[in-house]
Image (cartoon, rainbow, N blue to C red; front, side, top):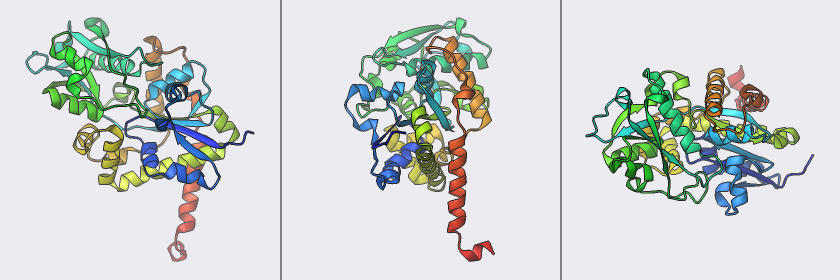
Length: 351
């Protein structure tokens, strides 16, 4: 067993209980007495280290965010384990120009659908997210991918999600927005609070928002569910550390559920958006949707999504999603929190 002096973690600029715990300093505080430094990849400049946000190559690390990089890393043989899932529905919107005549998904037949591509990163999660959204929307309305033309639009900015290098961009300057406005494509896709802000900035018509579909297998995408993964070495050698991390993440979710206004503000800071955009994209009660679990419905949707990614050549290989999940640390974390809560009850409360 290796002695640890540093734990690494990373998260995406999206709503996660890990993000809230990190903003409040709970993860660092948890291991301070052990003399273990907790370092986020958001604070490093070494590109090799930062790449672990995508490929999870760092030992003794954990990650919560979009599931596509986590799935991609596991498909390539990286030994990680899913120890928690957070399903926070978010706006997944297909946008058209108001005067285009494209008002519904049925109007997409024969149209050009813009897909941002980014060759600068190891796994093009945004391309995969966009293709999935289009495919799910089309299928839900009796159409298929063969009914449309996907147009790749290479992005020209140096966007690196999940790192300090992420910069807020004027929506009108984005490559896909420009392509929509100048007629290169008929529709584009965006999501979350930044997607809502983009729609507002250009006065776009929302053709369809997948979040309104009641079927999880339609809504599942990079952001739902968000995976909490750890490298297998950390789990094997220090399972107690993983449990302690999970306890803090669970506490963050519970805190958010009872502090709705503050939770919205935290999410706005995390997503580089306004509180108004956060509530429109994730709902007024976003704080109640930052829980961590391993619900079978979420696991099934994640497995369905992984199969989609494999069939569309986004992965390095296929694998068993259920075998990727280790429920033991989360179960232990919940037990310990229940025991701690029981011990903290006044004696009179137990009579």
